[in-house]
Amino acid sequence: MANEHWLREEVEAAVADYRRMLIQELSGQNYSKAEHNRQLQQLTGRSKGSIERKHQNITAILLAMGCPYCIDGYKPLGNYQALLHDVVVEVLIDDPVFEQAATYAANRPAVAPVGIDFDYWVDAPPRPSEVRDPQMPSFQPMQRDYVATEARNRALGLAGEELVMAFERTRLERAGKSNLAGKVEHVSVRRGDGAGFDILSFEHDSRERFIEVKTTAFAKATPFFISRNELEFSEQRSEQFHLYRLFEFRDTPRMFALQGNMRSRLKLDPVNFLARVG
Image (tube, rainbow, N blue to C red):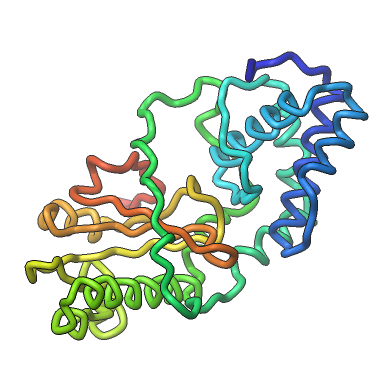
């Protein structure tokens, strides 16, 4: 069903519609997915479900290109037309309006919300498949690396860490461990970023819990960077290491946790190499 054959003009209309919604989302503008879908039905004659699947296909392509996406409900769906990939590249790669909106969204500051909501937790996604989608080229020529831009957004990262600090203290206090709650430490602030984790917390039996926090304003599946130091620390202290992934941080913060050796929990793609001459 996902690999439905659409004519080029239909594909172009779907990509243009997705582009408009994505720019609105990245810019903080309100929009109605239902109304967008209704208008695209009228334009293409396609069903509501068919259009939703095509938008999910577009999400999958953008994710593979290292592009931020945050249209709630359009989870990535593979097995798409090669034509769709080509049109997404044509429409978005050199689009100055999209670039401005994406860069703006990646650089926007944030602060930790007031109040701790234990409904933040969601299930962690399964480990990604090692099999690369054969439809996707091995190199995607994105104009900017928006994931890297957001990773340098210190205000956003700090806000995520502060939320986790408050969350951990509340978790321990609710368990009757106020003495441990008072010992929760913001390691990345007090000691610097070289420890291999951001927050020192505790289990109910006083064992140490080492927490690395990764925060994004975008969707759950948005990729993130993890350092060699963090990976090595997760190997050495796998029984105590937890990675907390916060997502959709500016709208409705949610998070999931991965515990253990991150080399076995994550699909890791090398992105940088130290080069020497001679």
